[in-house]
Length: 476
Image (cartoon, rainbow, N blue to C red; front, top):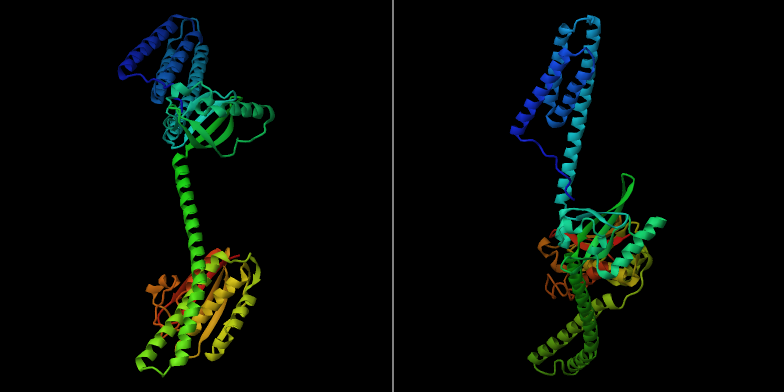
């Protein structure tokens, strides 16, 4: 802030001179008192000296001086002028001593309060000077009264070029009149548009460059005068970062949309020629199976199996791309009904594996019904597929957390090695051979994409041979 006048302290040499002058002053006053009738006039000189000592020296000197004067007053009791009664002289000196010590205590207290106030001001000034944000104070006319060093760093003006100038010197031209009109309107109506509210404004540096600022203004009343304090922060780097981030997000969103569209179009357009290839290969297999040599039959089987697997991959890729392109609006759903729809779709597999599926009370959520059915169906299908040589047991439960529901699908299957936890949620990632466990490896990737679209997360907790517990969250 604008530096206040600093109280000059005397050097050791000047203090010696002052002490000498004070001693001569006291001696002269005492001698003057000895030749004059008893009274208060000369003792007032001693009190003046006390005030002088209190302003110049430390509290210890004040007590020393008061002690000396008290001693002189006591000695003076035995030197009362002729014609003056001892009682009168005693009352006179006692009154002087009483006044002296009352004044001493008052001066010591005032000195202490002054030093505390000075230390507080110094601490406040140090805090303001060290502040990263600019702090500027103006009066009700918009005239700058004080600034801290951060204001100089932000705008490039030294304090002396800003103090007593209108604050609009720190604003671009178009904002000058707007600021003056707002300040005038506020003083007349007390209608707040900026006071007590942070907002982004534009500032102008000494070199003329314009830059964005965060500004918060508060009103204070000092000595019956309305003052306004502004807290300023240069947000140039933050705005640049935000702009770069927005561009990156836009680019990523556009790329994702293009990739989804490409995946959808590619998988959709590939289906027809692949279907034709598969049909002719199956026709060859039907007509010439066992009519050609063994090697030809083997080649036809390879072609038929490859065409079938390619069809599955394309269908799954099409399903994956539809998660972000062909969606339904969220609505209130009963997860118990959603789970039952998934169970209906898996009836045949459940019967074939003699699986036992249980579930607890499930909550109401907002979501896309067909997609959440897909999530349950994929998780249950995996639990049926990756089973041990025993009856599959699957349990679905829900827990009410602070601001979300935690849904769990627990099975007693083969489990998953923890090192593959991240990999299993990627597209077309498989941990087992197709001969042992059929599938394309895209089911969990679809689940992850659906859950993230619903604002949740999905993960797995498991150990090999101990079964798996897939968990996902849905907002409440």
